[in-house]
Image 1 (spheres, helix red, strand yellow):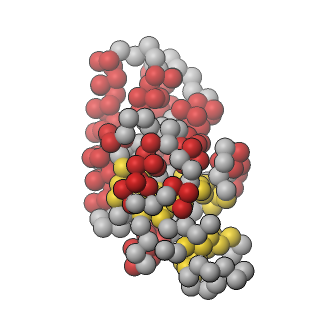
Image 2 (cartoon, helix red, strand yellow):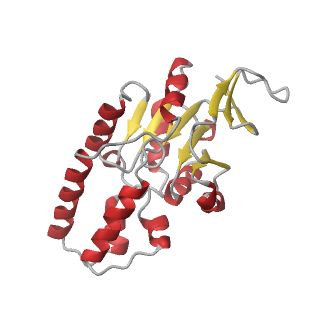
Image 3 (cartoon, one colour):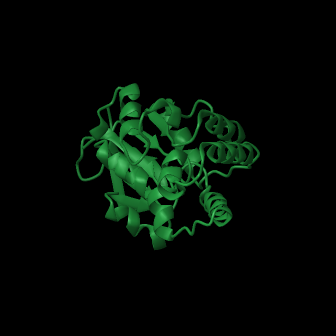
Length: 234
């Protein structure tokens, strides 16, 4: 398979928000008498739309309570300082120079994406972006990744996805793409178990190379460290 496009999740892939997300939901659980397990975070919080988390883990909350929590989270995220996952901006810049189509596919709202883009100066690095308000069903459903592939005019099977959450990997696999997990080694197996082809801890070892491998006809390779190379071309 020769790949032609790369799709990126945002939280945990482009920006490092794992700790902040964990602390927010733990505090919310304590306020409302909900004890959250690691499985709850993996399956219903990380990478999932907020309404999904409410429906599954906080079904007793009223619409008024939900709106208040949405507003609280929005205020928090607007004022947060975001940090890029190591190596990701350099990779995006390289992909842009090579004219490889890219998309940001996130369960976040447009306003959060705009805050992140301004802080990290990401404007122009993604060919397109998909936010939660543009799709009917969020991750783990494939809608976001399928829409991104259509906008880029690329077959899903020729798209490579970077994801850090179980629900995101499930969405990518359901869309027919190849998924690379972004996780530290101690928790990476969870992503491999649901279909990720490989995992990386961050993007510091991810590079573009013109060197052919194994006689493959591709003119460009995305190297995931020293052992894995993925071919790219038209």
